[in-house]
Image (tube, rainbow over all chains, first blue to last red; front, side, top):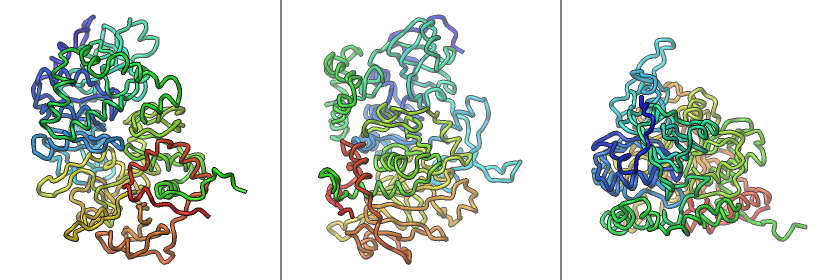
Length: 306
Length: 284
């Protein structure tokens, strides 16, 4: 339980809560609310050997793979959907053997997190038997249900060392409010040993009580106010997905590991010691205003994808 | 007299969307996952035409019955859950499937075998040759949901300079991400006691398969510009054919107009190879 009155800190101190070799659950999903600023800081602090768990992800996992920070992936999907296709750094890292491939599946992940949340030694599922995931995960077992005699798969609890989240609002105490799809963030927060969060705005507790607390403070280890902390993924209503920047990212990543380091990591991660410098590098106020333009109606919103 | 703007032909993509939509029953819960614009459009089309009471769960956002203003290339986007009546949690959607309350899911694969087993995890058995993006929730859902519609836009497997074809519809999957009607050991779904009844169609850019009583893919319909020999040449396994094998039913002009209005950016065409995008069929 994390009960300190004031958990606010800066981005560097926040990310220092992640240790070499940790099992990390990254919040958000696909191009929505990925804690990108925290992940860039993780890369700058050179924290590696990470074991990643999650459901459907994209640029977040790909960036960490491109920086050589990942030892194992148990994600259920890593890619850029129909937008840009496969995740180049992730693919390279898996195929070279740098990242051990331990793909999982969404409900299996949910049940493993639930086991951890409830303090149980396993949770059952009816699915998964007959698929390649049984061989990929020797820790999945089968048992006969004592009530029906049916064969079930049992999966062990999954307690990430740290969950890294990006939320819309937080208070000094660590309460978090997420608008829109929470994806697996709430499960991650309840299951993980530590929860670190970047938030768009730190607001008074009274304000959070009004709009509702998505994740109660006692799960949360520390938080930092980092506006645009999910960029280039979306954090509506503040900003839409930056497709233009993501296209540049994907182009750099597709050129190879070294090119990605020179063309992307150097200018946008290593070369930007602070988040403010990153926001300047991606185009400053003008670029950010453009991402808020979705609120002007469907045509403006659609233009962001053209 | 038709309005001049009324479509007189449909594209291959629009025909495939219509085919996928026709597999969707009214009154069920159906879920479209992510990375699947053809399926997303099919669900919205079904809900506008024959399945008014469909409980349409949008993948990634888990919004229920949304009315997106246009389709985006990314699924977890607020565009895609505008107008949603309510939202599910990730655990709620999968619990509904596990307890037998999700009627249909849509899955694809880089490899699809005759029983409807699919691989989206890895190519290469002993050695990893190509890491694929992964199956999301497909492994669990293929066991649990009542029916699965399989679709692929790359059935066609043109020979390389040495005459070899890398089939999409394969003899054997390198890895089984999602299950069809028989496991690799030959066990049937009823022996495995899965909750769901498995895939009942494969919609491809060459034609449509259903599954016979043994759970084997069976050619059921063809697009107007494809013949059986072409399907055989592009399929890695032998398959039976329906006695009433015929043409794939095409959409009405109104259906085509609806698809075009919902997908002004033509996102669904990104699923199709350039040469397939050029195919079109005259509407009656």
